Length: 92
Image (cartoon, rainbow, N blue to C red):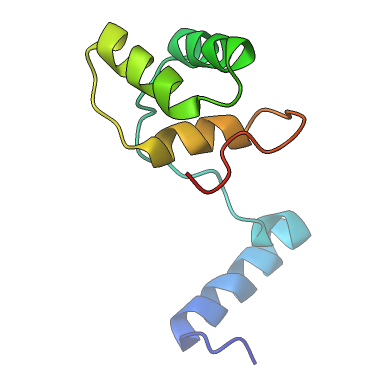
């Protein structure tokens, strides 16, 4: 039904027996460290507030100031986390 390995299903059953329903939830996992600190993200969002139709310029400005490298997709992910009216990222 789930196209899973028998070891995976066995693990699910063991967790169900020992922890109940909570045992079936995914635990938080470590991931890649964030590229920009919360403060740097706030600076970027401040630039976006001032010029909402120029996200690439805001990204370039932060990259220059922070001395870091990142793709524009990184900035799109930052924007997705913040509820904003309209779509400032669009198809650029």
